[in-house]
Length: 75
Image (cartoon, rainbow, N blue to C red; front, top):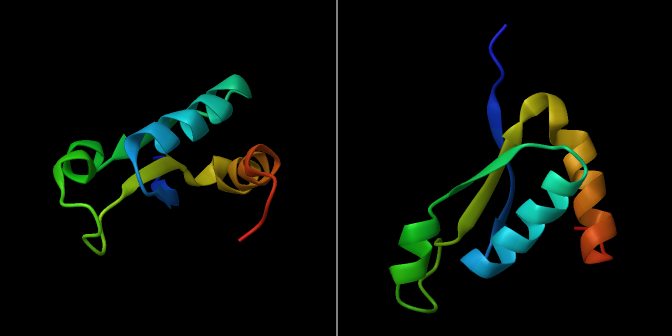
């Protein structure tokens, strides 16, 4: 069975994405970043740009819980 990647969240910048990715890694959830370079070179304020954090679909619910703990908030 193939694991599907899904978007966990979109961050405004690469630094924030790396911090959240580190929190996921600390609890054993693998993740990858998408649009990191594009978001870094885009003009500030450009709507729709951001760094997406992708996780395997099977890890999505647990990853959401980790981000709530890490961010101290919910969506």
